Structures are given as structure tokens and as C-alpha cells.
Image (cartoon, rainbow, N blue to C red):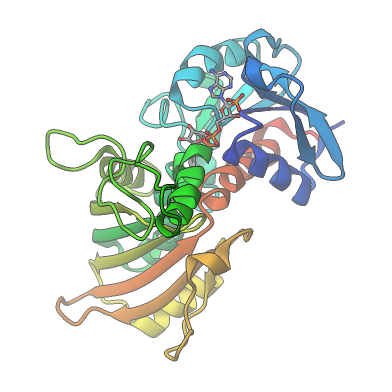
Length: 340
Ligand SMILES: NC(=O)c1ccc[n+]([C@@H]2O[C@H](COP(=O)([O-])OP(=O)(O)OC[C@H]3O[C@@H](n4cnc5c(N)ncnc54)[C@H](OP(=O)(O)O)[C@@H]3O)[C@@H](O)[C@H]2O)c1
């Protein structure tokens, strides 16, 4: 007997990718239900070779369902996730609402799979921020070998991280630059994103950091090790899908770049593409639709005793959201639910 699964937010970027990944990984589902807002009632979404008609999240009865993937944003999550959880359905949530709740595990299965066991306090498991997920997949195996003291990361984040409206804004603004009279004013973003970069993701905090930067700090500590110091600068770039990160790491112990490359080659979820020649590295366009976190440009930082630099790229809709959520469900299935 397999699982009865709900995908809430099935008409969105992450929800659609969730359905693709459930199918691609042949998740042992007996039934998959697609939910969205009332305005999408009856909208068809693809699930493998079949189509599902979207139902209304507001009136859906979660009783009897095993797992609900939520990708509806924090406001709708706040309203509906507790209803699903109370009905006995385990929620795997993509929003930031529960990530910092001590009673909710925050899980990247390659890094802290055992944390799923703590799901029962609220019947909710949180999926991390997209930038954090790909970074910790690359950091953990290096941390296990040489203990990371400090991380300095700059991100280059694609617009799909802000939902479908942001994808439309980049597309229409880019066309508008070439067609007089069809210029598109910024709406999703505070400044023009086409042919530009914006060093501002999420709201500003009192410290001067943005909330996105704070999330990378807090989530790395919760998932990997509270002793790791992280400082981040998060930047939106005119790329549709795929987040990139320039990461500088300071370790307690010396770690040679060749050994780091070998460790990452063996590490779960990691794919090393690192040739010191033209094109011998991965760019976001090449990671789209892939499961892996790609690591390139691994090299010693000669300005400190135990430092490395690297370039990390992953599909933010997959490892940064839908794939990680499905991997959490697989981990939960293997460790706890044991169906299918
Ligand atoms: N994109 C990423 O890289 C990424 C990464 C990590 C986490 N996340 C998180 O994942 C969530 C979804 O992101 P997204 O990029 O998929 O957004 P999106 O493309 O804008 O889709 C939002 C989805 O949520 C549904 N929804 C919104 N409000 C609702 C309500 N009140 N009731 C029922 N359904 C509602 C929408 O349904 P309708 O179509 O009917 O409006 C749609 O299916 C967000 O919390 C986001 O922060 C995204």
C-alpha cells in the first residue's frame, strides 16, 4: 500500500515541480491530489502522463491523507497547515513560517536526515530556504572533515525564487527594453531586474542585513552546526532558474583543495565539475531540471591559513524547494512511515 499525497500550491512554480519530481522519482503514491486557491478550481496540472484537476485548498478535507506538500506562501500556510496537521496529515512546508520553530525539524536529507524523527511534535517538517539548501549540501561533507569556523557567501539568485509573477516581470521587462512604448515598470522587485542585479532579497532588518541573508545564517546553524559563523550577501540576478553562490570557507584544520574536491565527488547530492579551462565549471542554465548541487572553482584561499573558495550552483525550484521536499518525504517514509 502506498501513500495518499496532497500538493497544495499545485499551480505555482514549486508545486508544479513537486508533481514532476514525485513522478520522476516514482514516489510510492496511491493517490495525488492537487490543491490551489478557489480561483484555480478545475485548472489542470500535469502529473506524469496524467492530468489532475485542481481542487480548492479552503474546503479540502485532509483526513486520511499521509503527507501534504505545502507551497502556498506563509499566509496561506499559517491558515491551512495546522488544519492538515490536526487531521493527521504530515505537512512538509516550503514557506519560511515554521523553519525557526524549535518544535519543527528543518531538514536537508543529505545533511540531517535523522531530524525528520522529530516531526510528531507539530506534524510539520520545514523545508529550508533555497539558497541555504544547496549551500549546506556542499558544506556538510567538508565540515565533517575539517570543521568549518566561518563562511562568507554571496548569492546570485534567479527570479523563479520569487514566484510566477517575478518570472513574468523579467520576461516582459526584457522584451520592453527593445520595444518602445512597452517598457515595464518594476512591480515585484524594487528596481528593474532586466539587465540589472539587485542586492536586496526579502525585507531589511535592523542590523542592515536582509531577511534572506539572516535566513542563510540561522538555517545553516539549525541544519549543520550552531557553531558555524555565516555572513551572507544575497543578490537577485536576471536569470530565470538556478541559484549560484560564491562561497569562502575558513576551517579549523587545513584542507587541501584536491582533498576537498575528492570529498565532494563522493558526497551525496554533490556533483563536482571543476576543470581549470574555458567552460570547465557549471553555470545556472546548465543546472536546470537536474537533481544535483554542482560545485566548481574549488581552490585554496591563500589569504588565510585554512581557507577554500568554491562556486555552487543548483536548480532552486528542485534542490531549493520541490526536490528537497520530496526527499524529506522519502526519508520520512524510510525512517518512520514505512509504507509503499
Ligand atoms: N521558488 C522557489 O525557489 C522557492 C524556494 C523555496 C521555497 N519557496 C516557497 O514556496 C512557496 C511557493 O512558491 P512559488 O514560487 O511556487 O509561488 P507561486 O508560483 O506564486 O505559486 C503560489 C501557489 O500558492 C497558491 N496559493 C497562494 N495563496 C493561496 C491561498 N490563499 N489558498 C490556496 N492556494 C494559494 C497559488 O494558487 P493560485 O494559482 O490558485 O493562486 C499557487 O499554486 C512560497 O512559500 C515560497 O517562499 C519557493
